[in-house]
Structure formats: C-alpha cells, structure tokens
Length: 259
Image (cartoon, rainbow, N blue to C red; front, side, top):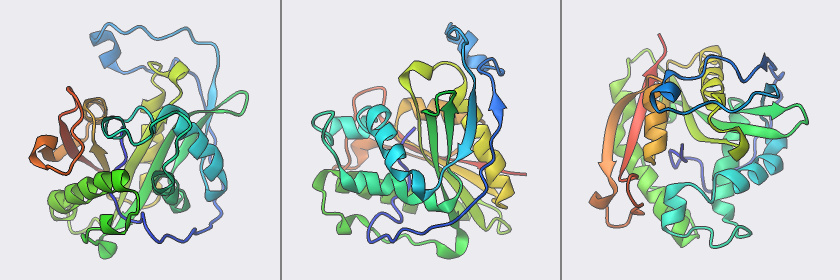
C-alpha cells in the first residue's frame, strides 16, 4: 500500500495515550484469499504463528526501523524520485509522517514468536469536524518528499470523501501505510491485519475506512478487500507529481462503509 493523506505532517507534537493491547493468536493457514489460487500463487510452508498487538508512540523507533527495511525503499512514489538514495539514507519528514498516526491508537503489528515485527499497518483516525483541505506541503523542507505531500493533498481535496459518506458518519479510519516482512508475503497476513483494522474501526465508532492506493498493487489489495473506488488520478495529469513506471500509473482513493 502507500502513504495516504498529507494531514498532520508538519509541526506535530507527540501525543501520548495508554491503551490496553488486544492480542490474538492466528495461524498462517487462516483462509488465504481466493485470488491466490486465481493467480496460481501457492502459499509458503507454514511453520510459525503470530500475534497481533496495537502500536503506541512508544513503538516509534521499532516501527520506523521496520518500515525502512520493508516499505520506504520499495514504495513506487519513493522509488521514482529516488527519495532514499541508498539503504542507509533517511527522510526524517517521511519518518515523522509515518509515526505521527501511532498516537491515534488504531495501528497494529503482527509479531512473530521471537517478538519481531512481520507486518505493520499504520492507521489514522480523522473526524468530519476536523477536515482541513489547505495545502500542507509548503511547510515541508524536504524538496522530494514535498512533491509527494502535494500529491496527497491534491487527492484529499479532490476525493472529498465526506461528501460521499452519509452525514451520520463522523469518524473515518484511514489505512495509511501497510507493509509486511519480505519472508512473510503471500501468506494472507495483510488480509488479517486489514480485518483487524476494520474491527478496531468499528470499536472506535468509525462509519467508514479509507485507503489511498498509490500503486497498482495497493489498488488490487483495496479491491480484494471490497473497498469502493471514489476517485482516481493519472500521475501524468499533475506535472509536479512523481511519475512511477507502469503498472503504477494511477493514484486512487477508496472507501469502505461500515454498516
């Protein structure tokens, strides 16, 4: 998946909270998506289980380390503008963006039997009364990441998801970043993390989920999870936007209403 809306990136103050973590046991044999068989993908041998746990701001350093290994370098928008020139390079503005949502209490990680992260979903909580469509990218000092933020702000303004949701919906949980360990891909882990995200969203009283797909892979994932596309934009339409190589030609905004 990909980073999503550009809100809360600059001048953020860390907010602390305490939530009791909900931990459940899953096995990797849990109902792999039907699409695996359709794509002739065979699940890998199952040897280990994992638990799910909520993330808090205290987990920031471990989360960033995981994302530096398995997301930041691979995300198509980051790749196409060479945001991180080497595996050791860092974009602190991107790291702050990624970690700022931890304070919302809706992000989760899959943890293996050794206590290591094998999958992470960073979720943000937004409310109708807090909607702000102003362009935040001007405050970003990093010229490359600024291009991504400007694109994300454009998606937010043009999609206007609140106009598409029932007036009774006052809270939306946004799936902002999702990533799995390379050795754990193809096992249905992301599906479980997204299902847990939906459970948390309902627990928080959210009326819908949102996912911005900036790659073809994340768009496919959204559609498999029964999200509905509400807005799409070809990168070629915006001169300032990164222009990833095919098949990543379009950015899309998806929502899933929780009935």
